[in-house]
Length: 117
Image (cartoon, rainbow, N blue to C red; front, side):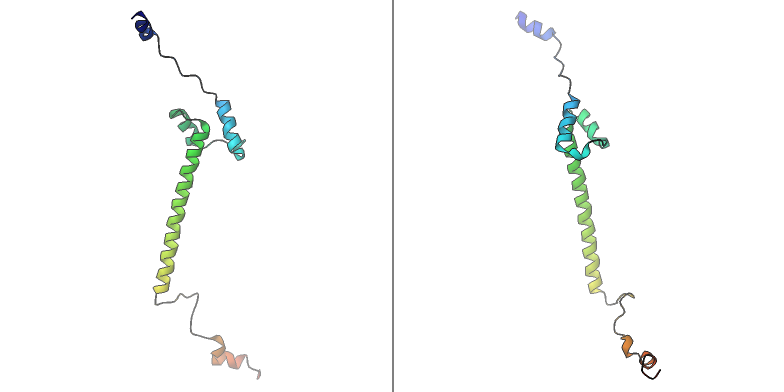
């Protein structure tokens, strides 16, 4: 019974201090292109607030960025497809591609470019 009381009186053991140098080295080993560059803002904040290793926080950040870029590209692709389909259905051709008029069939140009000159 005395042992239980002594355990209750002792303060909870503090978690060991993190070795940020080792975490940074693991991150650089996994992503050597980061050497000498600052970490993105959210990576260090996430690592500290959520008590995650730097490598895990960076990989989560990288995955969020990749997902956001993928979603942006999907939306852009959807818009391009929609524009292409609308252009196919359009009864009017754009001014950049005038259709039907053959410049060689123009009588003025035929006479102007003819051998009589």
